[in-house]
Amino acid sequence: MKQITNGRIFVLCLGDFSRGLIGGIITSYLLTFFIPATAGSTLPQFLVNAALTMAVIRGIGTVVDAVTDPWVANLSDNCRSPMGRRTVFMRWAAIPYGLFCLLVFFPPVQGPSIGNGVWVGAMLILYYLFSTLYNIPYSALQAEIVTDPGKRVFLYTVNSLFYVISSALVFCTSMIKSVLMKNGVAELWALRIPFIVFCVLGALAALAPAFLIREKDYVSPKPYHQSIWDALKATASYPNFAVITVGYLVMWIAFTFFNTAEVYYITNLLALDDAWVTYVSVISIAAGVSTYPLVNILARRVGKKPMLLGACVTYTLLYCAIYNYRLVIAAVGGPVFAILIGLVIAFPIAITNIIPASMFADLAQYDAVKTGQNRAGMFLAARNFANKLCQAVVAVACSLLLTGGSGAATSGGVQKTALVAMVFVAMAVVIYSFYNDKEVARVIREGRND
Image (cartoon, helix red, strand yellow):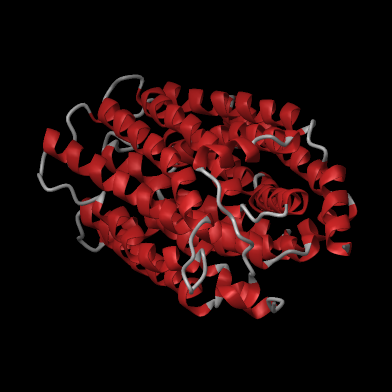
């Protein structure tokens, strides 16, 4: 088998550039499109009782997403296509992945309608389905192609770089919207135009690794035949996997609250205009990317677990500051607080974008050494299964918290999302402390020496 070159790693990571573009639209703008962040918005009301409808739609969609993860993983792990077990799924899913994301924002009726709610729900479910069909095999392919733990950190550094850059592009939507509206474009189309551009670019980026990476040059899959439930039980049997999965789950509950409400923090709590969403994103991206070499160095010298714990502690303090935003604004002012958010979150974002993915890939390799079977797809799906089921609850809770049951976001509701995020990321610190990273490293090292 070939060893993948650094140049090919960049091609492989274009799938994460796609994920940042397409997934970022849903994460950052799904709520603000249907539940405007400010009372002065000219966006039409598409949904009847928008807050409750969006809570139900997102909850159902996320449950469907979670349930399909192990199903797709089992299909991929057992696939016997001559092209390989992973890229065959990626090729078919890439274009629908971008298309259904875009169609979510094109409900057919111009005005509040139950039919629009059905449309948005159906398109969102299809988006989640094709997201799973692409991303589960794609994540497994990454874990299988790069087997050296040191080079794996580099892989996920490039992954994170591409993901962060594409996420930053999505956050430019607010600035693009402002420019388009100043030139006479209606607010509705000032959002839809960048969404169209990002979905097309995302679909093209998703196609690149599917067609340009020859899977069988790098991966020699071992025979694998196991039912979906047996695979899930076997995957969850490792204590380290249980710890890292629960920790990751709790951490991402916090991140989901924060990411969903981030636009509201800037525009509602800090009372800054939409352009500041882009400014904060650019600051955090630029500062975070500059720390990527440091993440690689520290991962080798101090280990992955201490870095992850430090990042979560920093998140806890930042979320606490946002919850107490009035005190911070009184001390430094809204614009300075926004800049500080971008700067303080930069290094933790770099860590949590790189290290957890690398740790899960380590665990998949640990499992392969222990069992002699390659179940990378199911390993990653088992993580996502628990994660997304809980995010379904978050999807409902965040929508209702933001609005307090009314039709628009309230300052008190936005503030509560920061409190909830703070509590959950603090819980992640406690859970991650039980992860035995030394055992995982030892087994992988022994397996590579055999």
